[in-house]
Length: 220
Ligand code: C5P
Image (cartoon, rainbow, N blue to C red; front, top):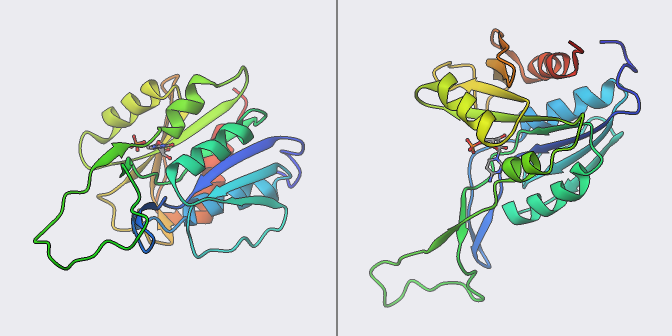
């Protein structure tokens, strides 16, 4: 992995959670820190690639100012940004933890608690960005997703890879104490549409990013 080995290659990376607004002061979100996606964006940039990072609401900053950053809040905004950038991307890595559902309507004013015992919040399904980009995938483009599974991990990951038309899927093990949300380390197995399966040990997210970039850019 020499320093300029990916010069001229265009890369899209998504990172972080999405926030789905309920009213002006409340949202539905998740605990994704964005660290894995940021590490992948920085790893690609360090090898000379032209990187666009579409980031959900995170409290991270990029150490590499060669990365173009687009900040978004909701899944819909993330999807719109990704559709534009993916058109001429050679590599697309979807590391964001996108909310599956959003409130059907966003209240214009702060919802009051007075005079109610409870409430029902109606949710509607968000677009699946990975599946959307999978359908639009062009010749030569490499599309990579992530999976976080609690059971039948590899079987479920392969199912996702097929359904979303991905070339690679990075499986995070939830059983591993050094893997997952909020952590600085991760442990992954990378699976391909052609049946490859590569397992790595627990490493820093930047080292995991290097393994992912090595794997998906290797010419077979
Ligand atoms: O279906 P699931 O959410 O487990 O799939 C995970 C993969 O799909 C991740 O790469 C994630 O970034 C992507 N995804 C997406 N848009 C969604 C849901 C998931 O891009 N709405």
